Image (cartoon, rainbow, N blue to C red; front, side, top):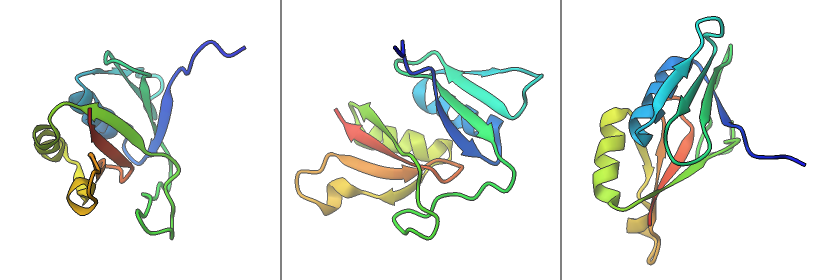
Length: 124
C-alpha cells in the first residue's frame, strides 16, 4: 500500500527559479542537491512538497487553449484573495483569469507560475 504522496513534480526550463517562486509563494524553503541541479524541491509548508524538474525543450502549457494542454494545475487555499494575488504577481505570476469577477459565486482566480503552469488561489 502506498504510504503517502512524496512530491508533486513540475517540469520547467529553470528548476531553481521555479522552486524559488513556490518557496516564496508558500512560505517554504528550497532544498537543492548540488549533485542533482535539474531537480529542486520546496519543503517547509503545509502540504505535499513540490519538486521542480528541468526538462530540455520545455514548453509551457497553453491555457485555456489546447495547442499544448496543461498536465497539472495546483489549487491553494487563501484567506485574502486580493492580498495573495498582489504577492503572487510580485513574485512573478501572471493573471490568466479572475474567475471570481466573471462567474457569480466563484471564489478563485487562475494564474500562471513563471514556467507557465496554471495554478489557482481559492478563497478559503
